[in-house]
Length: 261
Ligand code: PEP
Image 1 (tube, rainbow, N blue to C red):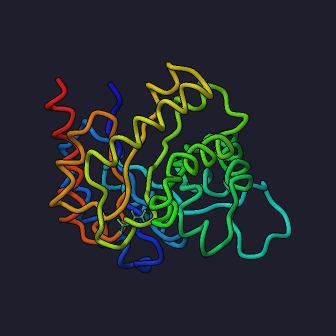
Image 2: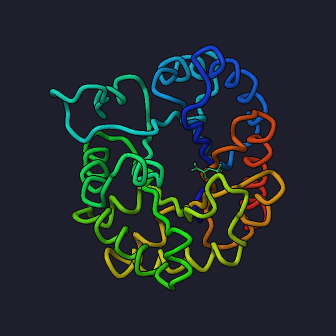
Image 3: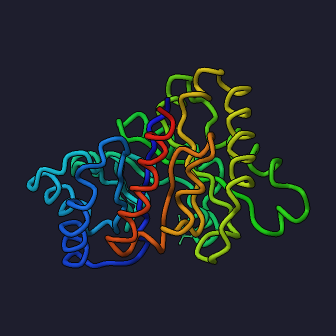
C-alpha cells in the first residue's frame, strides 16, 4: 500500500517569524497521525529554521521541502540555491516544475528533467508537478500534455528512482481558483499517469510511485478526494496557510489508510 503524503506549498507567504510560529502551532495538531507523510514547503529563508524547530520539538515525522532549486551544484547563478545547500540545511524534498514556475519563470520540461535528476543524485526527493491548462483540457489535449510532461520530465530515471519520487497532478485551472477537479476527474488522470509510468518504466515503479493531487484542496473536499484509489495525498496551497485547516486535510488523508485496512 502506498503511504499518503500531504504537502503544504506556502508559495511566497510567511516571513521567518510567521513560519516558525505556524510550525509550533501546526506540529502538535498532527503529532498522532502516524500513517501520513507530512511536508511543509516554506520560502527559502525559513527552511533551516523550520528544520531546527521540528527537530528541537521532536516532530521528526514532518519533513521540510524547498519550493525551488537550481540543478547545478554551484557557480555564477545569482539568486539561486543549489540542491547541495538544501540538503546541508536538512531539506528532504523539493518541488519541481510547479505550474507557477513553468508559466511565470519559463521552466521547460528539459530543465525540469535536469532538476529532477539532480535532486535524486543529491538524495533529495523531487515532487514533480504536472498539469494541463483549461485551454488544453477543453481542446481534449489533457493526456497528450501530461504524457509529454512525464516522458520528458522523468527521462533517464531508473524504475527504482521513479518508485521513490512523488508526482503531483495539478490541473492549472484548479490552482488557486477554487475550482477543484472532481474526485473522479482527478482519479481518472492519476490512473492514466500510472499507466504512463508503467509503460515508460515498469509496472512495479508505477504501483509504488505516489501520485498526489493539487488544486484548491480544502478541508471540505479533501476526504472525498482521498477515497479515490489512485490519489495518494495532496499538494495544498491556499488552505495550507492556516495550521488548523492544513491539519484537517492531513487528518482526511489518514482516514484513507484506516479505510484501506
Ligand atoms: C499549489 O500551489 O500547488 C496549489 C495546489 O494551490 P491551491 O491549493 O491554492 O490551489
